[in-house]
Image (cartoon, rainbow, N blue to C red):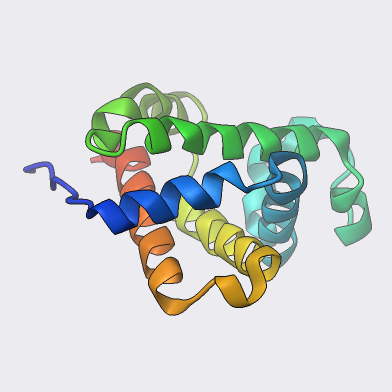
Length: 151
């Protein structure tokens, strides 16, 4: 399979860097991961060592989940810093998630959908269609890169 090269306009680069420079990682990361685990409960199987995930309240107050949500969001910094080479930048993370953790690659799509909802809620009226389009293009490139080692 030939790697698809994602082209970025100056405006798109500006939108992505603006979104990430204004994100409160300690707030958005945990909210996005919690939303994913609550809305898509089958994704919880990858977090069996994280303690009590019995219900929505337990998930929202779980320190391990919060910490991992922050870690995931900081993982996106790798893509922000390597926008012209996201696939290569994510080779190690893709290998980890596919070969060691056995995460279903569809879960990445579910998580970025939840992240988009949380970011949209935070940005409010600033999350205009062009901002959403750019953010989703960026997240799709990350999801594709994370799924690379599965093929």
